Figure (cartoon, helix red, strand yellow):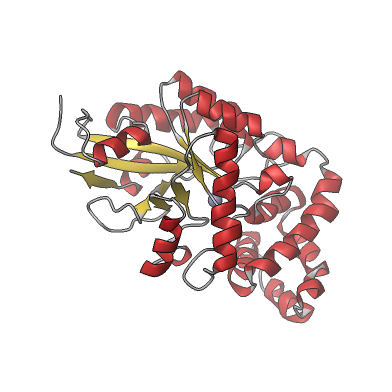
Length: 323
Ligand SMILES: [Zn+2]
């Protein structure tokens, strides 16, 4: 049955629960993930994004009245090893938005915090970070004050993340976290790269299983109108696109903003056009952009939480109309 219009829900997932030394990472239980997919299949059947895009261009394609697109960010190993074969088995084609620093043996910036706090605990991570503040010219006292009143580790965790993301420049944040990565995590878990991240072959396997690849920057910096500049353009948008196109031998024209909440994306038209001029056509965010119809510059995705029931998934996600 050909319908006049369809409504598409965009869903994104990150981690699966782990059983190794990083078991403290908050991730979806695989059974929960499978339940989410079964629910979507029944009520909002997942459709390959490439098909939706052809439909958007006016191709005569028959789509259900309501459907979904499943996406994944952050280049995680479990997405290639566990999720992708499962999806292929279920005939679901997803979009995997990858950050490319992993192919240069380096972690995504925020994941030093995720894996670091999971491995060492939040308090130990907080003190490790304090060891390197001098490297980026931060007064230790100011930083230590931040930890004093935060007895609750969840509060401290949030505070650390906000400090790194908003109080430091992207470069300082990276310098600081790479000290922890190289001097601690890599020493304590020598095979951390292989444990945590996809290989180039994993990416080729994703393509062979019928999935699509999008670009999620090189190192996962904050990109908004305040941080946007030539260096971000070159290093974090143009370069990863080239790397991914070399690996996949396909055109990569989907860009997924890092973090991607409202305060983490571009609104300035000139900036958006600069990104588009590099060959990107779809810009993914992670919040409800409020528009009824799809807008290629602001395609909002619901970030599925590891605590989401089926009801939560349905209530918290939203659809875009495509006519
Ligand atoms: Zn991300």
